[in-house]
Length: 175
Image 1 (spheres, rainbow, N blue to C red):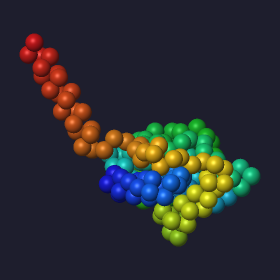
Image 2: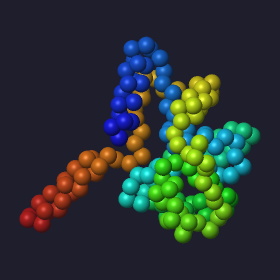
Image 3: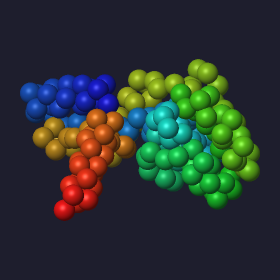
Image 4: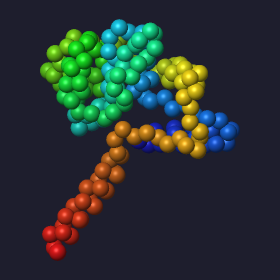
C-alpha cells in the first residue's frame, strides 16, 4: 500500500503542478497486457496473502485487451471456480502464480499454463503502452479527481475496524 500511495501522490502532485490529466492503469491489467493477443484467457495473479490474490480476468478480441472480470481481491479457490465456469484455457502470470500453484492445480478442471519468465512480472513497457491506448481513447482523470484504488483495505484499517467492533460488542455486553 505504501508504494501505491507514494506513486499516486507523486503523479497527482505532478498533474496538479503541470495542469495535466492522469491516466490510471490498473496493475493487474498492465500485467495481463504482457501476454499480448493471446487466444487464451489471461489471469494475472498477485499474492495478497491469506490465500487471496489481486487479479482480473482478461482476453483479447480483435487484438484489443478485453476485461472479462474487473480487478478484484479474491480467494484462490473462488478464482478457480470463476475460471472453471468460463470453460476456456487460462494462462497465469504474476508473483502469485508460484505461491498458489498447488492450490490452483488442485482446484482447476480447465486447461491452464503459466507465462514464461520474461513476461511474468510487471513491466513499465506494458503500463506505458496501455497508458497510450487509454489516452487515445480519452480515458483520463483530472489530477484533482485522482484517488488510488485499493482492492482490499490496508491491514491497519482492518485492524482498527476489528478493534472498534470488539469494543462495541464489549460495551453492548455491559449494558
